[in-house]
Amino acid sequence: MTDSTPAPARKSSITQHRLVLPDGTVEYTAIAGWQPLYEREKAIAEIFHVAYLVETHGSTSRPLTFIFNGGPGAASAYLHMGALGPKRVEFGQKGTLPKPPVKVLDNLESWLSFTDLVFIDPIGTGFSRAVSPDKEDTKAEEKPKAEQPEDKETEFWEVERDLKALAEFIQTFLSKHNRWLSPTFIAGESYGGFRVAKLARKLQQDFGVGLSGAILISPALEFSLLEGTDYNLTSWATVLPSMAGAAIHHNRAQAKSKNLQDHLAAAELFARKTFIPLLAMGGALSEDERQQAYQQLADLVGLPVALVARQGGRIGIDVFARELLRDQQRIVGLYDASVTAIDPFPDRPLYEGTDPTLDGLDRLFTGAINSHLRDTLEVETNLTYHLLNFETFKAWKFELKGGLKQGFIGAVDDLRVGMTLNPYMQVYITHGLFDLVTPYFASNHLADLMRLDPELRPNLTIQHYQGGHMFYTWEASRQQWFGEMQQFYQRAIAD
Image 1 (cartoon, rainbow, N blue to C red):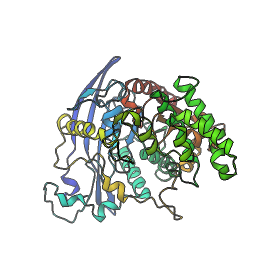
Image 2 (cartoon, rainbow, N blue to C red):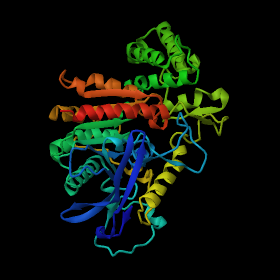
Image 3 (spheres, rainbow, N blue to C red):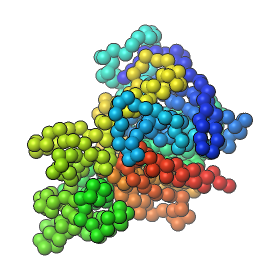
Image 4 (cartoon, rainbow, N blue to C red):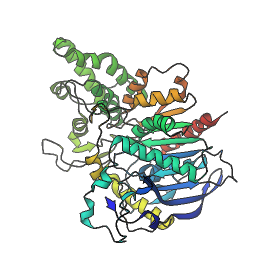
């Protein structure tokens, strides 16, 4: 929504803190505030951000990482308070949701131990707003009618304008804080991973920002892989291993080995060598061959073979989530299929409840980020913090030059160009194994199709962890990821 407060009226909050870690204490400055975005020397928006900076006595050698989430329409609070920042939400060991109220802890796996951090909320999320400098400052509370976005805000809700705004923010931040010589990284989750792939090219090609590393967390890289149809076959195969992983996690798979990695490997092999040819052959395949493949698929994903056959092998994630544990009146999460919830309407033909792994998290992250910003970081504002702005999501424009529409847009070409523009840039792609929305095997599949030069292929690391879309809510996965990222940063900045 558009806010009428002129840019100069916003004041940053600067506070001093310390984080006690097993290997020492990190003292840092937290800057929470709004950075204006200009057009023809007039402020047109204010991007809210939180920067955590460790004093290094004037040295610029410490890495600097810019971080954002996805949606589109999501604020950076998920990565901020879930994994990377100095404080984090408390979860159960395997990402289970605790009862209210939310608890915020010191984050012993905070990336602040090896990089400065800047969490960015794109326009329309968090406290970031478009501004109307010609209006008078009313300093009023937001009114319900303001929940309907105005044209000024929606200008930023499309692919290229969003990327340009983020790039301009990064460029300005580097200048304002004298960090042009720092090793620079970008990290994004989900649609934020799409942003990272795009910015890996745009920042270097159009804005002169060299990158030491790009980190894509549960990314959606090619939108054609997000939803299968009778004619778009690959997405049915790329989600299959995640379903298989969930099936063996819930002890529903008919597997030769109960080991998760063995079962995933079997599912990946089936997806490539049997399942895609099965779908591609269509009616040309014999009935015996088709039924044999359906039985293999049913054994892998833990569903009745009659259901698999009725679906023609095309198992939608909503069908899988409803049917895997239906005899227990439980559903599994779409964003983390290891998580279960009671089916509120077990007798209805279609599932009509909410997704426990997305909607269930709202209360945790909303409470945590508001407490952290307003109490710990002393941010003073009457604005509502938009954790996930569905107005932004619904209004987002995916059109690019050439008439591309939502469902076919992709970012892998930009990532490939970015890697060739800068053959030193390290790239890290990671997923949760039980994520059905942005499945890990989609990124594996795309990486195999990138045809990277042998000189560049070692720059791409792909590593997945137990858990879902936000696998870092699993304690063991977060700890393993933290150790991997320490090594990744060391490799990226090594001489």
